[in-house]
Amino acid sequence: MKKLLYTGLAAIAILIMFGLNSCNDPKLPDGRFIGTWISTDLTDTLCFENEAEFIRLRATGFYDYFDYSYTKDSITVAYTGPMKILTRPTTHRYILENGKLMIDFTNECFGFDKKVMNYKKKN
Image (cartoon, rainbow, N blue to C red; front, side, top):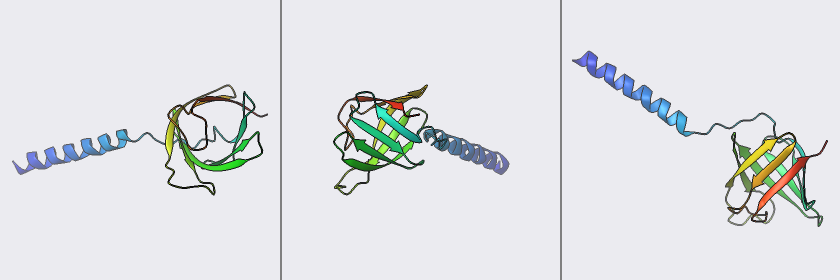
């Protein structure tokens, strides 16, 4: 009876561990964003310096700092510039194909217009 109980508890523990791991959308630090991305409407430029930070350069000459992380289909952005007052990270869908990047900011992101932005990678 004890052997059956221990076997059952071990099986439950394994299932819980697999379940907890499957809930996390793994981060993909593969450098896919690193580089300079210019918006197709030429209003801003995103300079991804590494796997954790980027700078947004606006056509007006202003710039802002952001942290980011990403999964296979979403990017989480957090403003880290000098005006950081009660800002929180926000997550957005993106599509990255053939040197083109689309980020959907329609659910709001501090520092960005509430719209879908399209960028092209600078060569």
